[in-house]
Image (tube, rainbow, N blue to C red; front, side):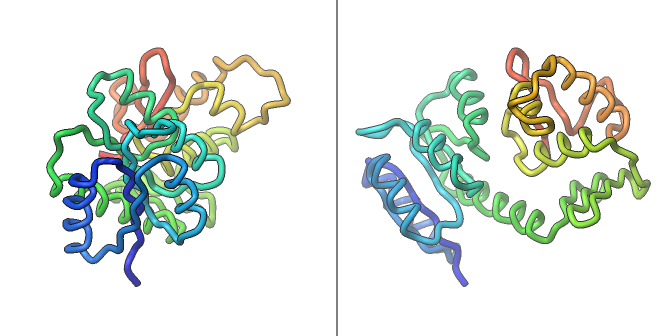
Length: 226
């Protein structure tokens, strides 16, 4: 069954090009020209992925992403002319799964879409595998590194899985703390740094030069699946 992709952009020529390339890959395309229409169409259609322009005529793409993230983990690719690092990091912190800047290559966009769907399939299979080196079994809650079982605390496991399920998305210390403990319990957020340090010691080949869990300066942490 073809995957349905919601393309959100007010520039019709861009939509036509994106739609052509996606349809050639076997995808179905739903179109929205503004933010409110995008949210309505997402809610009224079975959407598997969203390509979202940030510069929309009514509400911003960031606000669209934030609202959709309140109800869904659907993959989101942000499409924008903003090229500064702060805008890109902000997009990831809001919950985007990938980012592509204008002008862009339609082939590159399709490649990103294909890669995201492969990632989703891995998660739905209840196992997340990274180059067969690091494997997270969501059913048994077991983690293996280079075929060796890794012993994690409950908090370490929760942090690892939330990061791994959303590669490249930046999580603040506060967000990770809320996830593992709960927003009603006050705990010093720097405890997250200790958990990250312990995680790296267990899953990284070189904890001082981590391959998977990366620090995003002044923001928090992200999982790098490249």
